[in-house]
Image 1 (tube, rainbow, N blue to C red):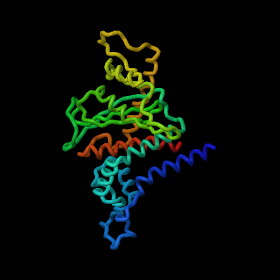
Image 2: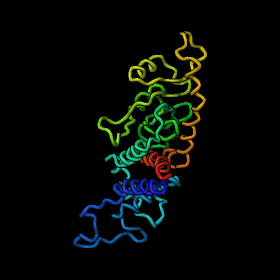
Image 3: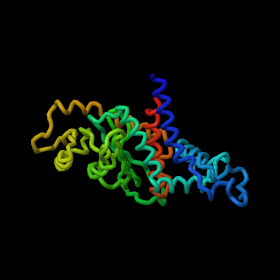
Image 4: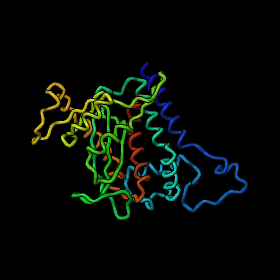
Length: 284
């Protein structure tokens, strides 16, 4: 029974990736073209979307420059354009959410609690939408994960705003479709657990209006009465879950330092890393 379930999940995952990586238009199909277009020496056919996807994944994992892409993959400019176009079309985001929907159908997402945190990626010269901080100039990416560490939503922004100001926008990016139930996608975990930087009564009030409980330690110099007791604060001991997920993102070296000038390209890499993390759980 487990083998049957695993094979079904693997088939759905492969179908979701093929829908983005194997689409070929008639104008780009060499079999339908009136005349064959010569390809550069030492480069694969630029119309093969699967090879383009493999080249993008190679860049994401290795973190090298586009011009250092091996000759076995299509031309770097082709991979760069496809990554940008697919990100603008929402392809990577739709694949990520499709995998989350699959896990939600199997009841493997823990909505009883989620964890929120951010990280900092240094940006090189020429990058757009970056800001200077005490750690240097760079880009801040926020991520919210479920109780098992699977990314549910993300938000990329310049590094200058405080993380507490980006919390609500990050939570609004959660959209997990309900497979067998009509209605809007699921967007609200029961609880959000974060560190002391998110201690804000205004944020607690706004999230409570949406039916979300915020659990974060109070500042030491707080003068107002506490807003949470020790029973709910026990869940804070599991905050290492989001720290582990941030460590998983570090395995994709292209995300550690932002070399891409365009935030769209960097966001595309980030979304690919998100659905790769979720895909591992789908195939288990």
